[in-house]
Amino acid sequence: MTTTSDAAGLTVKRKFKSEMSMAFVLVGIALIFEVLG
Image (cartoon, helix red, strand yellow):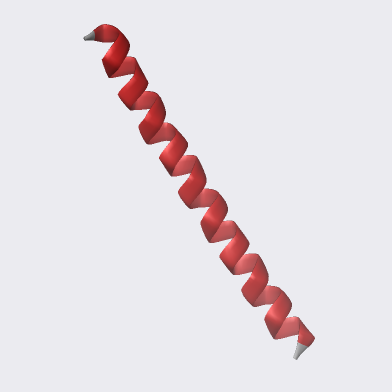
């Protein structure tokens, strides 16, 4: 049981990390367009 819960926690953490990095990329693109505009 502990193995499955550890794996599930790792998957959730990895998904959250990838979503955060994608959000930072989108914010960076928005800032670039704000500076250019």
